[in-house]
Amino acid sequence: MGTSRCGTVAIVGRPNVGKSTLLNALLGQKLAATTHKPQTTRRTLRGVVNHGDAQVVLVDTPGLHPPKRGLHAFMIRQALDAARDVDVLAFVTEASTRGIHKDDDLVLRQLEREGALTRPMVLVLNKVDKLKDKGQLLPLLKTWSERGQFKALVPISAQKKKSLGPLLDELARHLPEAPPMFPGDTLTDASARDICGELIREKVMLELRQEIPYRAAVVVEEFDEARRANETKPLVRIAAVIHVEKDSQKAVVVGKKGERVKAIGQRARAELETLLGCQVMLELFVRVEPDWTTSEHGLKKLGYVRPA
Image 1: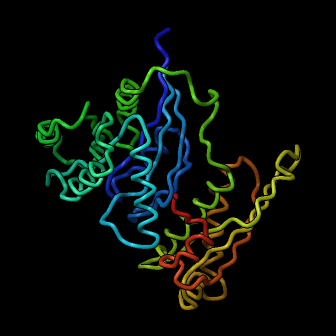
Image 2: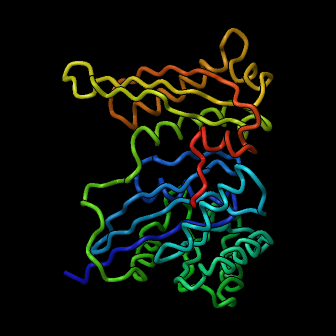
Image 3: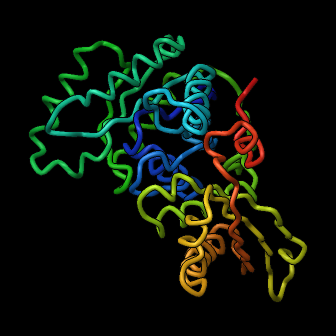
Protein backbone atom coordinates (compact mmCIF):
# COMPACT_ATOMS: atom_id res chain seq x y z
CA MET A 1 0.00 0.00 0.00
CA GLY A 2 1.37 3.40 -0.99
CA THR A 3 1.64 6.60 0.97
CA SER A 4 -1.72 8.14 1.82
CA ARG A 5 -2.39 11.54 0.31
CA CYS A 6 -5.23 13.90 1.04
CA GLY A 7 -5.98 17.51 0.22
CA THR A 8 -8.24 20.03 -1.43
CA VAL A 9 -8.50 20.87 -5.12
CA ALA A 10 -10.33 23.99 -6.34
CA ILE A 11 -11.99 23.62 -9.73
CA VAL A 12 -11.56 27.11 -11.20
CA GLY A 13 -12.03 28.85 -14.52
CA ARG A 14 -14.20 31.24 -16.44
CA PRO A 15 -17.99 30.71 -16.62
CA ASN A 16 -19.53 27.89 -18.64
CA VAL A 17 -16.44 25.74 -19.23
CA GLY A 18 -17.95 22.73 -17.43
CA LYS A 19 -16.63 22.98 -13.87
CA SER A 20 -19.81 21.72 -12.18
CA THR A 21 -20.29 19.03 -14.83
CA LEU A 22 -16.74 17.90 -14.04
CA LEU A 23 -17.45 17.75 -10.30
CA ASN A 24 -20.55 15.64 -10.89
CA ALA A 25 -18.67 13.35 -13.27
CA LEU A 26 -15.82 12.79 -10.83
CA LEU A 27 -18.25 12.08 -7.99
CA GLY A 28 -20.35 9.73 -10.11
CA GLN A 29 -23.48 11.47 -8.87
CA LYS A 30 -25.14 14.79 -9.56
CA LEU A 31 -24.77 17.23 -6.69
CA ALA A 32 -23.97 20.52 -8.42
CA ALA A 33 -26.46 22.45 -10.52
CA THR A 34 -25.55 22.46 -14.20
CA THR A 35 -27.13 24.33 -17.11
CA HIS A 36 -26.03 25.59 -20.51
CA LYS A 37 -26.15 29.12 -19.10
CA PRO A 38 -23.09 30.82 -17.62
CA GLN A 39 -22.90 31.67 -13.91
CA THR A 40 -25.13 28.80 -12.82
CA THR A 41 -22.85 28.12 -9.85
CA ARG A 42 -23.09 30.78 -7.12
CA ARG A 43 -21.48 29.12 -4.11
CA THR A 44 -18.61 26.74 -3.53
CA LEU A 45 -19.53 23.06 -3.13
CA ARG A 46 -17.23 20.34 -1.83
CA GLY A 47 -17.26 16.76 -3.04
CA VAL A 48 -15.07 13.87 -1.92
CA VAL A 49 -13.45 11.31 -4.22
CA ASN A 50 -11.37 8.41 -2.95
CA HIS A 51 -8.87 7.48 -5.66
CA GLY A 52 -6.37 4.74 -4.88
CA ASP A 53 -4.46 5.77 -1.78
CA ALA A 54 -5.60 9.39 -2.09
CA GLN A 55 -8.64 11.28 -0.93
CA VAL A 56 -9.31 14.21 -3.26
CA VAL A 57 -11.57 16.89 -1.80
CA LEU A 58 -12.90 18.82 -4.79
CA VAL A 59 -14.19 22.37 -4.45
CA ASP A 60 -16.50 23.53 -7.23
CA THR A 61 -16.43 27.32 -7.63
CA PRO A 62 -18.40 30.02 -9.48
CA GLY A 63 -16.95 31.10 -12.80
CA LEU A 64 -14.49 33.97 -12.53
CA HIS A 65 -15.40 37.06 -14.55
CA PRO A 66 -14.75 40.82 -14.43
CA PRO A 67 -15.51 42.24 -10.97
CA LYS A 68 -18.97 43.69 -10.41
CA ARG A 69 -21.09 44.50 -7.39
CA GLY A 70 -23.78 42.69 -5.44
CA LEU A 71 -24.33 39.02 -6.24
CA HIS A 72 -21.52 39.00 -8.82
CA ALA A 73 -19.05 40.27 -6.20
CA PHE A 74 -20.19 37.52 -3.82
CA MET A 75 -19.63 34.86 -6.47
CA ILE A 76 -16.18 36.13 -7.39
CA ARG A 77 -15.13 36.26 -3.75
CA GLN A 78 -16.34 32.69 -3.23
CA ALA A 79 -14.16 31.49 -6.10
CA LEU A 80 -11.05 33.48 -5.18
CA ASP A 81 -11.21 32.55 -1.49
CA ALA A 82 -11.47 28.88 -2.43
CA ALA A 83 -8.53 29.14 -4.84
CA ARG A 84 -6.36 30.74 -2.18
CA ASP A 85 -7.20 28.16 0.51
CA VAL A 86 -6.62 24.85 -1.31
CA ASP A 87 -3.63 22.59 -2.00
CA VAL A 88 -4.03 22.27 -5.77
CA LEU A 89 -5.79 24.19 -8.56
CA ALA A 90 -7.62 22.44 -11.41
CA PHE A 91 -7.80 25.17 -14.05
CA VAL A 92 -10.62 24.24 -16.42
CA THR A 93 -10.89 25.60 -19.95
CA GLU A 94 -12.36 24.48 -23.25
CA ALA A 95 -10.65 22.78 -26.16
CA SER A 96 -11.16 25.24 -28.98
CA THR A 97 -9.79 25.65 -32.49
CA ARG A 98 -9.47 29.36 -31.68
CA GLY A 99 -6.70 28.66 -29.17
CA ILE A 100 -6.49 30.24 -25.72
CA HIS A 101 -9.53 32.32 -24.81
CA LYS A 102 -8.77 35.89 -23.77
CA ASP A 103 -10.88 35.44 -20.61
CA ASP A 104 -8.62 32.58 -19.51
CA ASP A 105 -5.83 35.13 -19.18
CA LEU A 106 -8.15 37.38 -17.18
CA VAL A 107 -8.89 34.53 -14.78
CA LEU A 108 -5.21 33.69 -14.41
CA ARG A 109 -4.46 37.32 -13.58
CA GLN A 110 -7.24 37.33 -10.97
CA LEU A 111 -5.76 34.21 -9.39
CA GLU A 112 -2.28 35.69 -9.48
CA ARG A 113 -3.41 38.84 -7.66
CA GLU A 114 -4.85 36.61 -4.92
CA GLY A 115 -1.56 34.75 -4.56
CA ALA A 116 -3.28 31.51 -5.63
CA LEU A 117 -0.80 30.65 -8.39
CA THR A 118 1.76 29.57 -5.81
CA ARG A 119 -0.20 26.30 -5.61
CA PRO A 120 0.44 23.44 -8.04
CA MET A 121 -1.91 23.87 -11.01
CA VAL A 122 -3.20 21.25 -13.44
CA LEU A 123 -4.72 22.36 -16.75
CA VAL A 124 -7.99 20.55 -17.48
CA LEU A 125 -8.75 20.90 -21.18
CA ASN A 126 -12.46 20.07 -21.26
CA LYS A 127 -14.90 19.36 -24.12
CA VAL A 128 -12.30 17.65 -26.34
CA ASP A 129 -15.18 15.57 -27.74
CA LYS A 130 -16.36 18.70 -29.57
CA LEU A 131 -13.17 18.96 -31.62
CA LYS A 132 -14.04 17.67 -35.08
CA ASP A 133 -10.38 17.21 -35.96
CA LYS A 134 -8.48 15.54 -33.11
CA GLY A 135 -5.26 16.67 -34.77
CA GLN A 136 -6.03 20.15 -33.45
CA LEU A 137 -5.53 18.98 -29.87
CA LEU A 138 -1.73 18.66 -29.91
CA PRO A 139 -1.03 22.25 -31.06
CA LEU A 140 -3.43 23.52 -28.41
CA LEU A 141 -1.72 21.50 -25.67
CA LYS A 142 1.65 22.73 -26.95
CA THR A 143 0.50 26.37 -26.70
CA TRP A 144 -0.63 25.88 -23.10
CA SER A 145 2.47 23.88 -22.20
CA GLU A 146 4.80 26.63 -23.41
CA ARG A 147 3.46 28.91 -20.71
CA GLY A 148 5.15 26.79 -18.06
CA GLN A 149 2.43 27.42 -15.48
CA PHE A 150 1.06 23.90 -15.17
CA LYS A 151 2.31 20.72 -13.53
CA ALA A 152 0.31 18.68 -16.03
CA LEU A 153 -2.11 19.13 -18.92
CA VAL A 154 -5.02 16.68 -19.12
CA PRO A 155 -7.50 16.68 -22.03
CA ILE A 156 -10.91 15.34 -20.96
CA SER A 157 -14.62 15.31 -21.67
CA ALA A 158 -16.59 15.80 -18.47
CA GLN A 159 -19.86 15.33 -20.34
CA LYS A 160 -18.74 12.00 -21.82
CA LYS A 161 -16.77 11.06 -18.67
CA LYS A 162 -13.59 10.50 -20.68
CA SER A 163 -10.06 10.53 -19.17
CA LEU A 164 -11.29 11.22 -15.62
CA GLY A 165 -8.97 8.57 -14.18
CA PRO A 166 -5.81 10.20 -15.56
CA LEU A 167 -7.04 13.56 -14.27
CA LEU A 168 -7.51 12.18 -10.74
CA ASP A 169 -4.05 10.59 -10.99
CA GLU A 170 -2.50 14.00 -11.69
CA LEU A 171 -4.49 15.83 -9.01
CA ALA A 172 -3.68 13.19 -6.38
CA ARG A 173 0.02 13.28 -7.27
CA HIS A 174 0.30 16.87 -6.08
CA LEU A 175 -1.65 16.51 -2.83
CA PRO A 176 0.25 16.50 0.47
CA GLU A 177 0.91 13.27 2.35
CA ALA A 178 -1.86 13.16 4.93
CA PRO A 179 -4.58 10.87 6.30
CA PRO A 180 -8.12 11.16 4.88
CA MET A 181 -10.19 14.15 6.00
CA PHE A 182 -13.51 12.32 5.65
CA PRO A 183 -14.83 8.78 6.17
CA GLY A 184 -14.58 6.63 3.05
CA ASP A 185 -18.30 6.76 2.24
CA THR A 186 -18.56 10.57 2.35
CA LEU A 187 -19.71 12.18 -0.90
CA THR A 188 -19.99 15.79 0.25
CA ASP A 189 -20.05 17.88 3.40
CA ALA A 190 -22.98 19.93 2.08
CA SER A 191 -26.41 19.29 3.59
CA ALA A 192 -29.13 17.57 1.60
CA ARG A 193 -31.26 20.66 2.22
CA ASP A 194 -28.73 22.96 0.52
CA ILE A 195 -28.20 20.61 -2.42
CA CYS A 196 -31.95 20.37 -2.96
CA GLY A 197 -32.19 24.16 -3.01
CA GLU A 198 -29.52 24.39 -5.70
CA LEU A 199 -31.14 21.71 -7.84
CA ILE A 200 -34.51 23.50 -7.64
CA ARG A 201 -32.78 26.71 -8.76
CA GLU A 202 -31.26 24.78 -11.66
CA LYS A 203 -34.78 23.93 -12.86
CA VAL A 204 -35.76 27.59 -12.55
CA MET A 205 -32.84 28.49 -14.82
CA LEU A 206 -33.73 25.80 -17.34
CA GLU A 207 -37.43 26.74 -17.49
CA LEU A 208 -36.95 30.49 -17.77
CA ARG A 209 -35.25 32.61 -20.42
CA GLN A 210 -33.38 35.87 -20.67
CA GLU A 211 -32.46 37.66 -17.46
CA ILE A 212 -35.01 36.24 -15.01
CA PRO A 213 -32.95 33.15 -14.05
CA TYR A 214 -30.16 35.44 -12.85
CA ARG A 215 -32.62 37.40 -10.71
CA ALA A 216 -33.99 34.28 -9.03
CA ALA A 217 -32.88 32.70 -5.77
CA VAL A 218 -34.26 29.63 -4.03
CA VAL A 219 -34.55 29.28 -0.27
CA VAL A 220 -35.65 25.94 1.24
CA GLU A 221 -37.85 26.93 4.17
CA GLU A 222 -38.95 23.44 5.20
CA PHE A 223 -37.09 20.15 4.90
CA ASP A 224 -39.04 17.50 6.81
CA GLU A 225 -37.38 14.07 6.93
CA ALA A 226 -39.64 12.62 9.63
CA ARG A 227 -40.96 9.96 7.25
CA ARG A 228 -37.76 9.33 5.29
CA ALA A 229 -37.04 6.12 7.21
CA ASN A 230 -40.58 4.79 6.79
CA GLU A 231 -40.25 1.23 5.50
CA THR A 232 -43.44 1.17 3.44
CA LYS A 233 -43.51 4.68 1.98
CA PRO A 234 -40.43 6.82 2.67
CA LEU A 235 -41.12 10.50 2.10
CA VAL A 236 -39.41 13.88 2.44
CA ARG A 237 -41.50 17.07 2.49
CA ILE A 238 -39.85 20.17 1.04
CA ALA A 239 -41.21 23.71 0.90
CA ALA A 240 -39.13 26.19 -1.04
CA VAL A 241 -39.49 29.82 -2.08
CA ILE A 242 -38.36 31.19 -5.44
CA HIS A 243 -37.41 34.83 -4.86
CA VAL A 244 -37.36 37.34 -7.71
CA GLU A 245 -36.87 41.12 -7.82
CA LYS A 246 -40.06 42.40 -9.47
CA ASP A 247 -43.78 41.65 -9.69
CA SER A 248 -43.42 41.27 -13.46
CA GLN A 249 -40.78 38.56 -12.90
CA LYS A 250 -43.04 36.81 -10.40
CA ALA A 251 -45.81 36.69 -13.00
CA VAL A 252 -43.46 35.04 -15.49
CA VAL A 253 -42.23 32.46 -12.96
CA VAL A 254 -45.77 31.57 -11.89
CA GLY A 255 -47.02 31.48 -15.48
CA LYS A 256 -50.55 31.35 -16.81
CA LYS A 257 -52.73 29.57 -14.24
CA GLY A 258 -49.57 28.52 -12.43
CA GLU A 259 -48.34 26.36 -15.29
CA ARG A 260 -44.71 27.56 -15.25
CA VAL A 261 -44.08 27.07 -11.54
CA LYS A 262 -45.84 23.70 -11.79
CA ALA A 263 -43.45 22.65 -14.56
CA ILE A 264 -40.47 23.77 -12.47
CA GLY A 265 -41.80 21.70 -9.58
CA GLN A 266 -42.31 18.60 -11.68
CA ARG A 267 -38.78 18.74 -13.10
CA ALA A 268 -37.27 19.41 -9.69
CA ARG A 269 -39.25 16.69 -7.90
CA ALA A 270 -38.00 13.99 -10.25
CA GLU A 271 -34.39 14.92 -9.64
CA LEU A 272 -34.81 15.33 -5.88
CA GLU A 273 -36.35 11.88 -5.63
CA THR A 274 -33.31 10.43 -7.39
CA LEU A 275 -30.98 12.32 -5.06
CA LEU A 276 -32.81 11.42 -1.83
CA GLY A 277 -33.86 7.92 -2.84
CA CYS A 278 -37.46 8.35 -1.76
CA GLN A 279 -40.71 10.09 -2.64
CA VAL A 280 -40.64 13.88 -2.36
CA MET A 281 -43.60 16.15 -1.67
CA LEU A 282 -42.49 19.51 -3.04
CA GLU A 283 -44.26 22.83 -2.58
CA LEU A 284 -42.99 25.91 -4.39
CA PHE A 285 -43.90 29.52 -3.66
CA VAL A 286 -42.85 32.69 -5.50
CA ARG A 287 -42.13 35.94 -3.67
CA VAL A 288 -40.72 39.34 -4.55
CA GLU A 289 -37.59 40.61 -2.78
CA PRO A 290 -36.91 43.96 -4.48
CA ASP A 291 -33.40 44.41 -5.90
CA TRP A 292 -32.02 41.55 -3.84
CA THR A 293 -29.09 40.94 -6.24
CA THR A 294 -27.64 44.39 -5.54
CA SER A 295 -28.76 45.21 -1.99
CA GLU A 296 -26.73 44.11 1.03
CA HIS A 297 -29.93 43.43 2.95
CA GLY A 298 -31.39 41.27 0.18
CA LEU A 299 -28.21 39.28 -0.30
CA LYS A 300 -27.94 38.50 3.41
CA LYS A 301 -31.64 37.64 3.67
CA LEU A 302 -31.32 35.07 0.89
CA GLY A 303 -28.13 33.57 2.28
CA TYR A 304 -25.49 35.23 0.12
CA VAL A 305 -23.34 36.44 2.97
CA ARG A 306 -19.88 37.59 1.98
CA PRO A 307 -17.03 36.33 4.17
CA ALA A 308 -15.73 38.77 6.77
